[in-house]
Amino acid sequence: MATFPLPLADLLGHWSSYVVYALIGIAFGMTLESAGFGNSKLLAAQFYFKDMRVFKVMFTAIIVAMTLIFLSSALGILDYNLIWVPPTYLWPGIVGGLVMGVGFIIGGFCPGTSLVGLATGKLDAIMFVFGVLFGIYLFGESVSAYAVFFDSSYMGRFTLPELFNASYGTVVFIIVVAALALFVVSEKVEAKVNNRPQQKLPAWSKPAAGALIVLAIVALVIGQPSNEDRWQAIAGESQAKLDQREVQIAPAELLKYMNDSKIKIMPLDVREERYFNQFHLRGALNVPLRSVQEKAEELQFELANTVFVTMSNDEVGATEAWKILKAESLPNIYVLEGGINAWLETYAADSFAEQDRISGRQPDQLAYKFKAATGSRHPAAEPNPNFLDLKFEPKVILELKRAPVSGGCG
Image 1 (cartoon, rainbow, N blue to C red):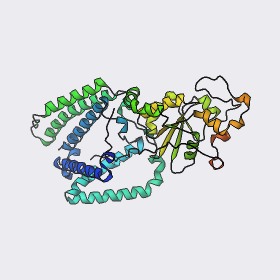
Image 2: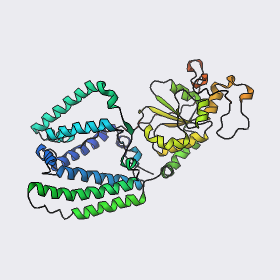
Image 3: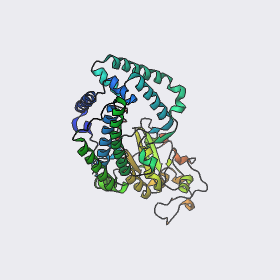
């Protein structure tokens, strides 16, 4: 079973975990300072190809971290789905990158390295940090004027494997080899620009590069776990919850939370479109069972207080969807007890005549006949809880989702 990322707050307590964060931050800052990232002259020199240490240090960190992440994921040690990957907004991201790049060239710092310079008392870094804070203020005050562009070209959790339609292991291997080749090229470029002999690489560099390539090959050969692999890793605990009816919530509990402003309920109707069109709950999202895994990535970006409830005509399809989403590490997932049939039995049984009830139906078949496609226009799509006696055994426990973290160049 995947055990990482570690829930430090659960293991150490709220405040004790901050001590770990502080130690990591201090170590990271010391590493950047020792690499010269607190010196604006060295940082700016990369743009003139005079000193490529920024490129070499940053790409070393990137390819080492990347290789270890996907190797750990391939071995089942790390759950990659629990790592926050910022969503891609293509054109705003390109414009933002250009703005930041120009600022980097002019000021000699990026936001992260300016804090390293600030910590060591460099005056240019202090001024740069003030400029960053002022820029943040201007952005916050003006973003409403271009909000449409700022939220445009949304692509979700879009990474290089999706772009090139290749496996994660293949992309990792190619990037590692390409980065190592570029390290050699950068050494030659530095020597050429500075009109000096090429510096001799440290003795440990070749064994380290070889080891990194070997690890990338191992990650490529093993491959990333499938949804079925991830389910098997958690099946013991998760199947027990299904069997003990811990995640099947009554129609009354769902209705209560549909009218609770503190919780965002997202009903996931996994039936085929013909059933969905006949009747569905107000606000339900139609995600046919075959599309649930693909939809999981998008659902990861929902608000932290979102509770997902899978539903089908009974519980067959909804339970399968629950397993898929659980394997994809989506938090706060529940199954509508008895499915749409139980919902209609609870809130609309009196509106159907005896001949409208389907006898001898197949599993996961709708139990009622609809004379027309009512969708969410049927009164039972959103009953008024104020006129109902809602009694149920509460089962929803809101889990805290991982929080997004800021990116940057260090």
